[in-house]
Length: 129
Image 1 (tube, rainbow, N blue to C red):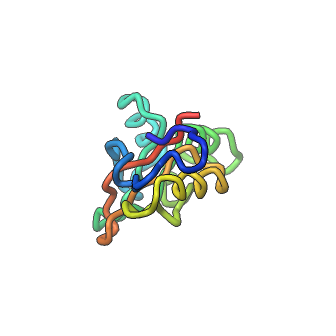
Image 2 (image 1 turned 60 degrees about the horizontal axis):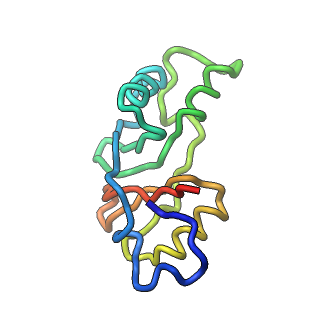
């Protein structure tokens, strides 16, 4: 997990060096209510969303899913792919940890998937502050 460090405190560290487990992953065809149950059951803050080939399509948070329930567009059949959530650009495992932190802060993200060349999630970098 990334912590807030003064600039330069990541000498030689890449995002792949500081990432944590990718955590729970679900298909983009999953119904929002089921995905929310998975997230709550896992005690996670976010889910990684995958396409039918297992490639990461984004990261969705509990807040984003519960906000869907409060909107006039709510239906019990809405799929994750129909919601607005972070769909990239994602973090490369070779990107410097400092640059990854800067990119996440610029985009107001608390977590970012670390994606391999094949599009599959290798892990997640998370801001702790």
